[in-house]
Image (cartoon, rainbow, N blue to C red; front, side):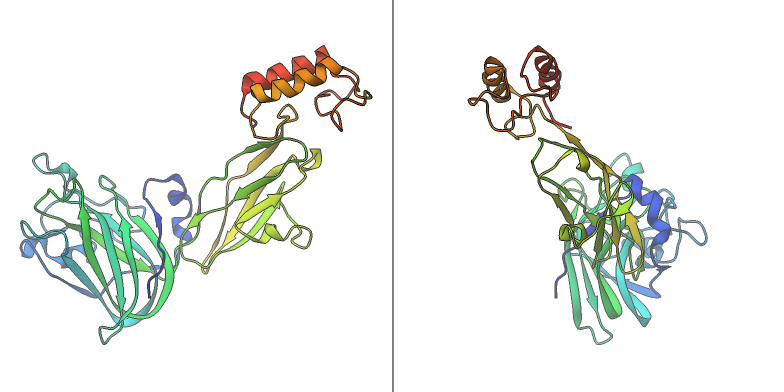
Length: 337
């Protein structure tokens, strides 16, 4: 079975905020590798905490590359090499922490870091229970890179296979600084963008998150849960609001729940953009053409005026110079937001 992966790169601000909400971290009891440069660079040095403080967390930085604190392969053995991590007792695994190889300090060849890899989860008999392929890694990251995926039960070993190294696999070596696992990675929400909309238009906000699925969603308006019987999309990843009016101008966020924790997206706002007369999220020349035609008519009561008199931006029943001043400000801003 293959699961889609969810990746959070270390260095993203939300990692520092929520890393401790993950389930407890655990380390393999032993490990083997298909290639080891020497005993000083054996795979054991990627599971024993060498290069990290005692009781380390994913937010702790790994020490610079040195003997007895990294796993490094033999020269010329990179892509296709693997390490297998063993647990004495079968575990439920839903997250992986990787401290990248710190070869960036080696001026002559700073390209050892793994930038793409596969994870296979195996039972005690060596049968593959699930796979998470094609995960991306970064170099020059001192704290853990965090990966969340659907939980896999009864895992006795995890196989890590190198698929790509930095600099298009030119480097003759690769490896890892440290690894650890967890049963669940808490949601790491991505930002939700503000949006502008014309009166009567439709707005959608989408919440995305990395972490261990499955996720639940509850959208909120000004901090209060939106009634899902009135708007069923408030319980989905994408909130849709139709026929937007002044009452919908508010701040929206989403509480994303996961197996181990919940997290809330940053809030986003709706801005009503009445000068966007063609409802394309821009106030541009096309809108000016619509406005100019209404301006020449002037009176909203005139039968030739478009229904609802949308160009009457100050609601005084006329499309006149006062409306033009409002339109020009929106036209200069261009984007509705």
